[in-house]
Image (tube, rainbow, N blue to C red; front, side):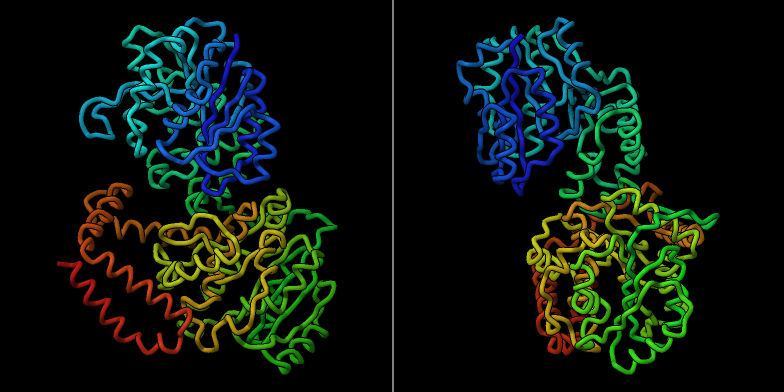
Length: 624
């Protein structure tokens, strides 16, 4: 049986990830020709590799979504289609084959039907896309195979000739995906599905029952669940961390193919939430760590009287380490060196450096004063700490913030040994940071972009970071203390930062370069292909969870019910409706504010009072 495949692709950056090359290589065994249809440009590196795998590449504008891509593919082949007994229409929206395609194609070849697919969606009433009528049961369009009887029929030709222009995702569902199966079935053509929805409890097994489909050896996993709305994933109790564990445990498919694509294309906080990228370690026993692991501690000690406290924390690292300390003055350096010379710590060596200017605090000290430490490439892992007093907050708030940092990074030797072994266990784990601080009145939950997002977008362009930004709060290392692999952040150190770019003291405010970089660290690591996790000690996890659960309950108790997704959508709709007539003006005000804070700090400070008045007026209007 002679087969042709039409593979539809789109990527806004023109990058073809390895999961696609792997899929095409495996598909090649079962088809005689692959037409690769791209609705986007393809970069030269990807194109060279692609030319070794597929037969033809059809580049087209992103018009008509995947539906018109397939239509153009059929027109491109023309009369040649008569030479084939089967045509397969598939796309980039799934990973696979998780299990060998041999099993699926053998099933297809041994059964007599006119068209088939890998997965299907059950009938839904009412149609969720229109609110009325029926969404018919249908084979999902990420993989539809058409055999000879249908392929060479007038019905099939007419279907594509009469295809209306597809202008939206909804159009593609209503005019093709949900229509195709019923349309041809009613004309007497038979079909079947390899991973049949009748065998599962949900309407949409490929999305909702992912782990069950894997256990039943379904050869594909959809990409969308990993970057879908985390509240929807939560409501349906979809365990995507277990999905990747199953792939690793019961198949030969490399989960790194999945990670590599998701890290490049998915909002980091959404991905961290959907994959539960939080590791909690206890202090039950110390683990043996690798003897030849090269570790450096880069500590910024603005307050020299805190050197004893900081070194006590650093000593919880079970390995030998090199210690680099930056500080603000020569007097501080003398004090710190004297202390270190008389300590019995187990560092291999130490070096104290004085920053050239006291601008940008710990961030500039890291990126400029310690730049060579990273770029020399002598270390496997870096632990970044700094002295923290937070004099702007009350004593308890300051102590908690500091505890949140130290306890989750270097709690004790047993905890730290497990943290080190975790990051050392996978060379693609590049960054570990404490979770968002929310205890102590810090207004971070849902708002921690503050005034930094516009500036972060500009710096991301400068660094050629193309990761999509999270909507509400960034996935960030709040407090700028963390563990990292040097290569994960190398792009930041390759940049030739200038002291003048950082704010003068005491202008360490939101919108400044230091606060922007604090929120960009994980985005740089993701864009460089590294996984990022939050880490917590068991004690700190207990303390944080109870407070966080209470906060959620207190807020939800003021809403009609406890279904978070419904309440979030309701509140968002109400807010959007209220601010519709002011949205453009308000966006312009916020844009102007960000520009002034970043580029004209002194002038911006003079506008703080009138800005607050403007905010109060705006909020009073929304409240009407």
